[in-house]
Image 1 (cartoon, rainbow, N blue to C red):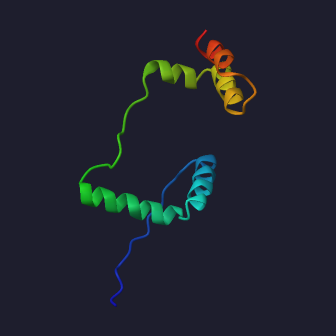
Image 2: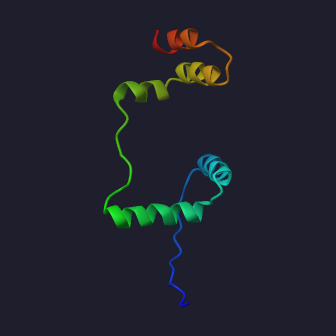
Image 3: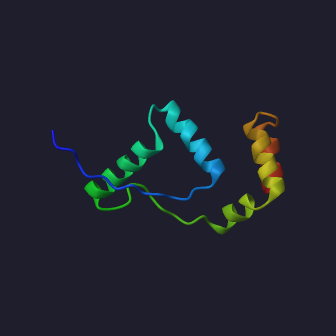
Length: 92
């Protein structure tokens, strides 16, 4: 079987994101190289990015940049606060 020529691609990704994604991919039984190959195959077949690319709206951007709001959201995720209390802190 003839071997297909390949190209090596280097990307820059924040370390924390790379670690999180590698852990997720490991749980899914795949790796970053395979994920990139899957993405490229989908772009090639569909001739577009295979998911919606959208801009964050202003309200979401403000919440993401508000340390107090993010603290409340993270505490809720960790189960330290009930949903209503966390939402009151985030949205006032």
